[in-house]
Length: 157
Image (tube, helix red, strand yellow):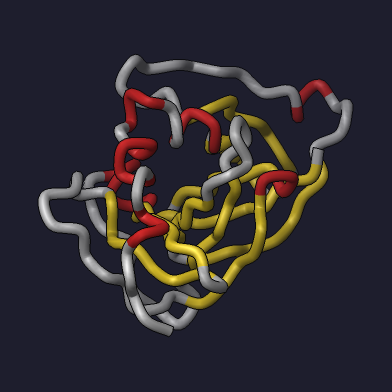
């Protein structure tokens, strides 16, 4: 499996590349009033309205540092493939191949409040925790509710 390694603080996480649409520099976001703190806002991505999650806020309770290396990783909903979701990361480091090596199979320690965190795998670059894109968009995260009607928003170019 090919993964994209991303940095949040001093930790490395990864997103499977099969769900990634594009990685772009951080752009201006339109805030969503009364949204959960991890929802940084929405943006116009190639004519589509996409909510953007700040992974730092979601995972560590602190927003990602805004740097030249800060990126938005746009992923598609693995279930419906109808919606896009942006993920803010402090940096996108590299793509890595997770092969059949037993160390790459990882171990999953699940916490009830963080179903979007998957297996922790050992790689040459160190320990990497997988981000489960499908779980980020699951009904209990309330994102599908936020996605409904977003196509009707007018954000301009």
